[in-house]
Length: 77
Image (cartoon, rainbow, N blue to C red; front, side):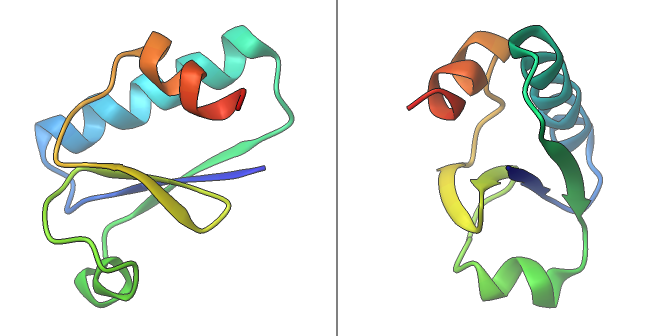
């Protein structure tokens, strides 16, 4: 599983990255969490507001910092 946090490196983006990493660790998933900070790459996802969270290339959330519990809910679907 590939999890991507889309954002320019702001505090909210960093918080979402930390929450995603925590969710992966708590669930014991074999997943990587990658930060995408390049605006052109973010635009390819069609994201207009950051931070955003993509799972396996599909945007699951945009414009808010999800809690670790909310990230878990998106990962175990």
